Length: 308
Ligand code: MN
Ligand code: MN
Image (tube, rainbow, N blue to C red; front, side, top):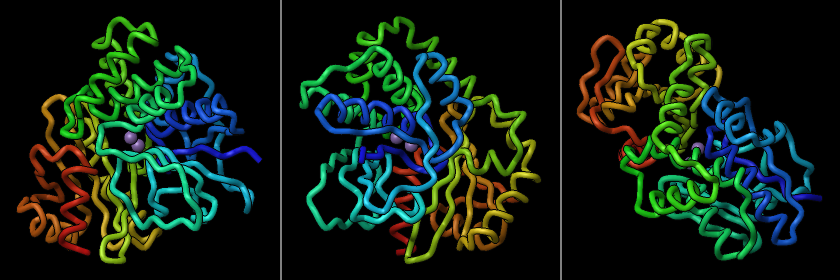
């Protein structure tokens, strides 16, 4: 049975691209592997796969009980395929915090605090001495630009910049600025998307102190058009909180160009929590989190420290 390779729920460009590339690298290393995604493509990822002329991985809803799984761009059960058993996991390539990770057998584990999973896959491709296709290089380059917000995110490392330069060459991409602008335009073009789908576009559940919290992010070059929909977004947040029995839910609207984060909070509980954790006063369901634009580096660790 082929190894199923997939990224997190609410997949982003890195999650889908890294699944496709990782499955290709494993195949060239002599293993049977097939890439998947756990949800619909967001508008940016749809643009990227069209631009790179790459086949979109199939949707995965369940695995066979004994089918091996390889996780990219995540490692936490709460963000993975529902019902996934740790015994099935044979590999992880990721750049997020480690959740509760325990496996019965040795696995291939590659995690580093870099800006993108694709950066780690390029390193593995070199170590394994297998080929990389131009199409794969273009997907990886787009994933790095997407995850690092064009190298603006504090998660960006020298390894990401170096990988992007090498991938631009391999993928024959001459104009990085044009690609970045096209990515941001696709990311920000969400006017036709209903509020509940917007909330789930980049939505992750984390367990802090044993309780589940939903942390959504929307990165955009036009925060005003999203904030104008505050009422319906708050309503979608309240529905999701009740449906998934979350202890709290937050939606960060990140302005890519100014590098700032305004976070929506549906109730006084979340407002009090944000004030306590970040010293950010909440006015009218909106908290100014300043330059905290990286969920994994500037938001999640603060929640973890205070709530666990
Ligand atoms: Mn991701
Ligand atoms: Mn990533």
